[in-house]
Amino acid sequence: MAKRQAKAPVEGRIPLMAGNWKMNLNHQEAVVLVQKLAWTLSDKRHDRTRAEVAVFPPYVDIRSVQTLIDGDDLPIAFGAQNVSVHESGAYTGEVSASMLAKLGCSYVIVGHSERREHYGETDEWVALKAQVAHRHGIIPIVCVGEGLAVRREGTHVAFTTDQVKRSLEGLTAEQVAQSVIAYEPVWAIGTGETATPLDAEEVCAGIRNQIDRTYGGAAAESIRILYGGSVKAGNVAALMQQPDVDGALVGGASLDVEEFSAICRYYEMPVM
Ligand code: PGA
Image (tube, rainbow, N blue to C red; front, side, top):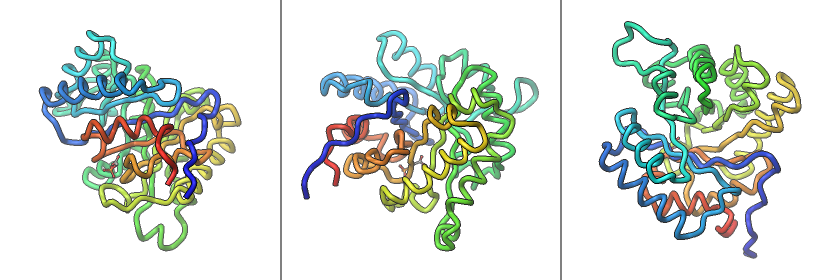
């Protein structure tokens, strides 16, 4: 098959490659990974206009990652995997948005399917988290996506756009424009099953249309919509070829520096 280069980014929307480490790596391992990632990206001359790179360590690693990134002025953003809906107070075990903002987090993942499934997070809860993030100047990465049963019924676009509608409740059009949505079909997370590029595009385009209808064309043009679920160096370029896919939320592969830095340089990868 002829090799093509991945498409140029849509003007004004810099793709985002987000590494969700989940509950992996202690603070020392985190520092090692970020150092290696920064070195690999600069050695391979990563083009920052083609992808912004961000890592999402567990809470306890964030201070170490921040010190390294700020101290060495590394071109890597970072964020948290979750946030409390509350501002402060008697909520044992929770971490507030103001604490994350103070640590320099640019992003926070909200409503990941693992939190929806294991901790009962609802769309209403996710919307509160997106709101509190914006109140503190942090960009939420709002995760949505259907399970296998919905996919088999063929109602995945309606299901996912409904989730988007409810999960963005209470945000202004300007806040929506700055937000990130991650479409992660649950059946493709950590399973090795990737949605085909056209499957990903079908839902991401549906989400953008939904944003257009609810918040207007400017928000639809500027919001970034990521695909997530078993993204690897071998499949990222074809996914990024799709007009409504603006990056990837990467789990397992983000723990491997070579693999993740190749994903970040999707624009050099052949389209399989
Ligand atoms: P995966 O996870 O890349 O390991 O499938 C993606 C995610 O859960 O964000």
